[in-house]
Image 1 (cartoon, chains in turn purple, cyan):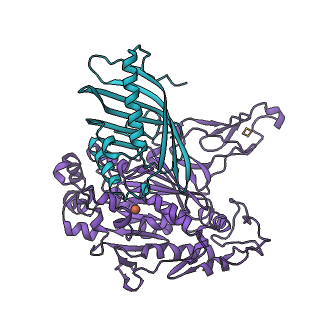
Image 2: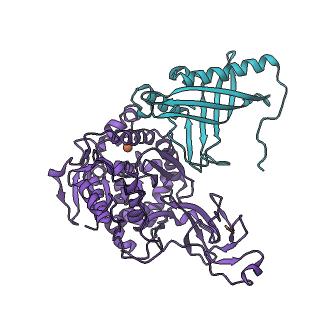
Image 3: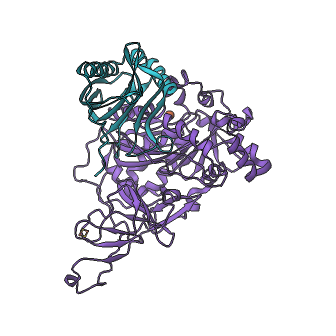
Amino acid sequence: MRGQEPNAGCGTWQPSCNLFSVRKWIQPEYPKGCQVDAHHIDALIEPTRVHGSLYTDPEIFAAELETIWYQTWVYVGHESEVPAANDYVRKNIGPQDVIMVRGADGVVRLMLNRCSHRGNKVCTEASGNSGTFQCPYHGWNFRTTGELIGYPYPEGYGGRGQLDLGLAQVSRVDSHEGFMFGSLSPDGPTLTEHLGDAAGELTRLTKLSPTGELDLSTGWLRHSAKANWKFIHENETDGYHPQFVHGSIFSVADSGIGALYSENSTAVTRDLGNGHSENDLRPEFRRLGQPLGWFGTTADRLPDYVAAMQTRHGDATDEILIEGAPHVMIFPNLFVAEISIFVLQPLAVDHTVQHVTAVQFKGAPDINKRMLQQCIGSVGPAGLLLADDSEMYERNQIGVGQRSPEWLDIRRGIDRETTDEHGHLIGGATDETGMRAFWSHYRELMTHA
Amino acid sequence: MREATGPEATAVPESMRRSVEAFLFREARLADEHAYGEWEALWTDDALYWVPAADDTDPMAHMSVIHDNRRRIMTRIKQLETGKRLAQAPPSRLRRMIANVEIAAPVDGADFEVQANFVVYEARESGTRSWAGRVTYRLRPHNGEWLLSYKKVDLVDRPWNLPTLAFLI
Ligand code: FES
Ligand SMILES: [Fe+2]
C-alpha cells in the first residue's frame, strides 16, 4: 500500500504478450516480482472503499490498458460518422490511434494507424474520404480494407505482390444501434454479452429518433482533464454531486435537472451489470407525465418532431416522449447523458480526454437544432456543466496524491439497495450504486476473481 | 493553403483606429479582471459570442466550444457571478495581449469588422497555460461609444485536446 517502499525491482509494467496473440481472455498475466499483480489489485478494492493508488500508480494504469482497454469491448465510433464508402475518421482505444473506415463494400472496419513498414502514421487527417491510405514515409499504399496494395520500387522486395503486410485490424468489431465497439482481443464475451441490459438503453435512445436512427455528425469537442479516467467514469452516474457542483448553474438557469438528483427524487441509480450503470430518471419523468418534459419543453414546441414520432410509434409515442433519453455509463468509455454522447480516452494515469458530441436524430431537424445548442451550452471545455465536473476530477487527482486517508469511500446507500424485477441492484438517486457497479466489474477483470 | 480571411485592408482615419483599439483594450481588461457586469454591458441585444471547435464550421450544425446568444451570455455571466462556478472559483489570473489589429470600414451602416491576434496567459493553482488565436469583432456605434455585436475567437490549437476554458476569452 501507500507508505510502503515501492518495489525497486519492478520497473515499468511490461505486457506479457502481444495485443494480437491468442490468449485466454481476461486472464491477467503480471510479471513475477512486480508489485502490481492480481493479488495486489484485489487488496486495493473493498466493498465500501477503494485505495487511492488505483488512481495514481502508473503501473496499475499500464496494467489497466492491457487487461481492460486492450481486451474488453471499447466504444470506438458511430456508423453515421462514416456514411459513404471510403469515409474515414480517426478514433481511439485509449492511447491507440484507430482509423474507422467504411470500405467500398460498405463494411465499417477499425484498424490501427500504424504503417506495417516502419510504423509511420498512414492517416494524418482527422476525417475524410479516400479509397486508399498512402504512408508518407516510403509511399506504401493500403486499401480501406487494410490490405497492402503496393510499395514503390518493388524489385527491392523481389517484385510486386510479394509482401503480405496489411494494417493491423482491431480483432473484433461489432455494433449495436450503430454504436461500433472494438475489442483488441480475439477472444472474450460477445458484444451482446458484454452490453447485457445496457443495450436496451442505447435502443431507448434510438427509439426517440423518428427514423430509428441517430446521426452523430456534428463533430466532437475534445476536453482534456488532468485526472485518472476512473474519476470521470465514476462521476458520470454519481447522482450525489449535481446539487453541489452544478448548484451555480441550477441557481441561475431554470432547468429542472437539480430536482432530479435531490434527496427526495424518485429516480434510481441502477447497476446494469458488467460495470455499466445508469441514473434512471424515468420515475421522475413519469410523475411529471409530460411528453418532452425530460428535454425541458412541451410537445407543441416541436410539432414536426412529435408528428414524425406519432407516425412511427402511434399510441406508444406519449410514453416514449415522457420517459425520454437514458443517462447511462457503458463500461469502460461510452456515456450517454440524454442529449450528449461522451467517449472517455485514457492517455496516462493522470490524463484523460472526454470526447463529446450532440445526440442528433436522423430526420428531426427541429429537435436537433435545440439539442445541439443545449449540448454546446452544457459540455466541453467551456460548458456550463462540464467545466465544473472537470475541475472536480482534477482536484480529486491532486487530492489522492496526498498521503492519507489512503482510501476513497464508496458506501453511500449500500444499506438501502434493493433488487429490481430484472435482478439488478438499484439504489437511491444520490447513492453510489454506480460506483460499486464499476468497481466490482473492474476487480473481476483485473484479478479474474 | 486556405484563403486569407482578414478584413480588406482599408484606410480608416487614425482617430477611428485609436477609438476602436481603445475599445478592444477595454474589453480585454474587463475580461481579464472578471468585471462581469461591465463586460456584459458591452454587448448588443443581438450579440453572438462564438468559439468554434473546428475550421469552417456552421455553428447551427456543428459543435462549438462556445456559441452564446445574448441570453446565454447572460446565463454564463450570472453563473460566474454566483462565485460558485467551480472552474472559476477561485478565478483564473489572466492577462492578454491584443495585437495586429486590422479594421475594415463598414459597408452601408453595417457593423465595423475588426480582427486582431491575441495571447492570454491563464494562471491557476494547477498551473499556467497560454491561449492564442485570432479574434473577429463586430463593433456598432451607439451614442458615441462602441458596442460589441459579435466576437469570434479562433483558437490556434482547436483541432486538438483543449483543457477547461471557463474564463471569458
Ligand atoms: S513507414 Fe510507411 S512506408 Fe515506410
Ligand atoms: Fe456533473
